[in-house]
Figure 1 (cartoon, helix red, strand yellow):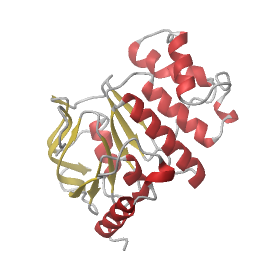
Figure 2 (cartoon, helix red, strand yellow):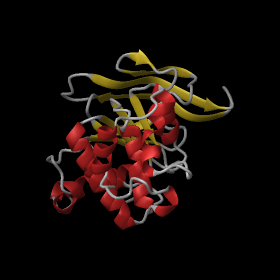
Figure 3 (cartoon, one colour):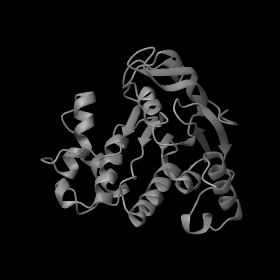
Length: 257
């Protein structure tokens, strides 16, 4: 499924997940998918269809009842150091500065007392947060908080970045700005990215492919390759006829139009 990608980063085969054990609520049913190394893939679907559940299984935070989930050929059984996760809320610790929040995951997961000052400075620059290094979360805008949360994941230099609707609670303008930042970061580092989103246009703008899940129990019902040129500039990409065609196609699959 990963096209011309040279290595498969993520492989899911026959994945089924119940909440409450067999006979309980079935969240996912017989999901098969593959995501290539360095590929940017978005997953969309109705609310409650199991998108976040699937992401948490890939992150090693949830188990599953049948089927397999592998990262780079290894079964996912627990959180991994080469996987970064960004959740719907920024989850910053309010008593820590931007710099300390950025280095927190390194300290917890890798036992490092502190990241190198040069690494922190480079991340601050990358996230366009220069001048806010010593600010606390309550002194930041919503968009800045989400940039710090992305930076927390990137500080670990993961091979895979899993993002669960990280911009869903933001206003449209801030969300557009963060989409631009995310495109810039991905086009620079080319990590494998899986993004959960409710926004069809966001998925088309950012992704190499868009996967569509059905109503619960979530099943993969479409795998659409987004054949738009890269690098992508939102101001011009959205004007391409192919962009609108993809949005209409996915909207039809989702039953929106």
